[in-house]
Length: 351
Image (cartoon, rainbow, N blue to C red; front, top):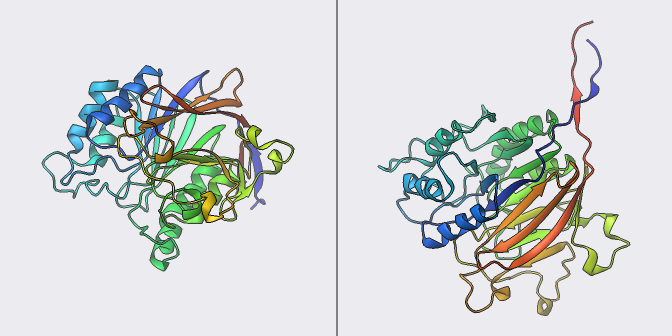
């Protein structure tokens, strides 16, 4: 048996100017249709919905997917992460209008050149990855995670289901651009009232691979600067020579990435509850935010979309921007991808 070796793999790049939209916390209303029309108007190639599709009980998964098809087309690429309100997910959801997993995974079959891998340890099919148009997306559901990520049961589930799958998918990955996606978040990585609802290990595993972390759950928009430690909220030293007004752009490398929340895809927008001046909190990790306090009269509850453009003039260059349905550009930033695509340690057997 030979010792494990590191193997450099051929890098997979997305096509030039590939555009991906991220939303979450939607609902079956006209506001959701307006969000989808913004996605269409921006000439988007892929839509990611980061959970909490609808808040009606019982839900209507068929109608939800029908609205997407009416606004974007039956074959438009949409991928989803299960949210805490998406109880009508698997085949046991017992509704006359279908279940989200069956409906969306059937939709996935209509996309050409899609590679999908499902966790064998997740009985509900919420943990899976897709490789599409030169980008990898790795999703975790929320079946075993509750309101407190310090709970022993939550940690056990994460260690047995999420972490082995993410470790494999991140290690054996030739894609330069990778997104890790789940609905819920950690308290210090959001500006509202959410608690510690997802394991730190997943955040750190994705950071170590330079993968971008996409969340929703809190009904607002905010993103961090590049961080070299999520749980310690340690900002990348890359910003050390920059003035505060210059610290908007992002650097990705193996050990540094950022997270964002894009959770106003049709739902109401919430107030900021953390990092407020009058509370005396020091929160230097934030690059941009859009909460209820930032809306103006006439805006449709502040609904908006975070867009990414990848391979912009260079395979390692990206651009992000958050836009609300009224057309106002809330946030803009450049992304410099310095990730080294290495397969990781492998056990190689034989002579």
